[in-house]
Length: 135
Image 1 (spheres, rainbow, N blue to C red):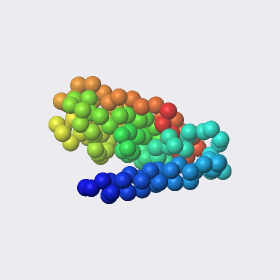
Image 2 (image 1 turned 45 degrees about the vertical axis):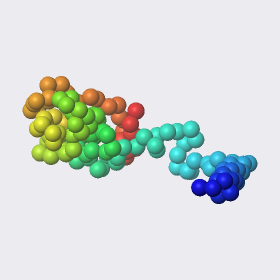
Image 3 (image 1 turned 120 degrees about the horizontal axis):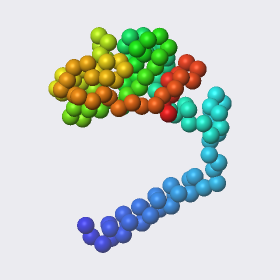
C-alpha cells in the first residue's frame, strides 16, 4: 500500500469515528417500557413463564434448568453436570439428562444415576406473577 492510500484510509477512519461519536451527542436514553418498573431488572431476569414448565418435568433456558417437581414448586439449577462439566441438555421422563457420560438428575437436582456423585448447583429463582425470575 502506498502512502497516499494509507493517508486516505486513515482519514476516512477518523471521520467515521467522529461521526459515530457525534451521532449520539445530546440524545437522552430511552425510557423503560411502561410495564417495567423504573430501575427494575426483573424483566431482564425472566427465565420463562410458569405455564411453560409442566408439573413433573422441566425446561432448559440458557444455562439454567427450571423444574416443577410438584404443582407450584419451581426449582432451578445450573446446566453444568457435576461429573465432568458437560451441559445437561434434556429433561425427559422426570429426569435431567447429561449426554456426555449418562448422568441423570432428579427434578430436585439430586443424583439419580452416576457417574456424577454431587447434585446440580442450585440457582435462585422466584415466581413473580406468571414468570419465573432469576435471583
